Image (cartoon, rainbow, N blue to C red):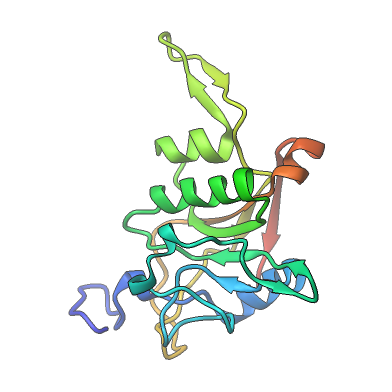
Length: 184
């Protein structure tokens, strides 16, 4: 899908593909079996959900190879990541899936605090642990320059990115892990 854009990029920003070098680095660690938010042009796994399939209604821990559940990868639409963050957490929490998401590093959203950091706020605005949260947050350097579906580079966004791993077993064992990664 092509739209007129004012930033010089060709693809709809929600069709932007994770750069192959970044995906390969993540895939080497997690061995993904599913690309949860993709289309026929930009998918990075053999098994993927398209917009028409509605990833928010599909199970993300459903891919098994040699009787092993494979982690799901999700580079969700950046114009509305909150329902995907909630879905990633819920799949890990209730279905024992491992979900790895590439997200904008936007700490101002309710979803970031509730599902990634695992805190809610009392009436006075004090953080209160809510029993939720990610297993790991990885801050990415340098800034991720996404690709058009054909693989050509888009202009750099004006924001940084994080990788978030939802994994109930790992979170319960280790708490929240913060790290950083140079992807190129």
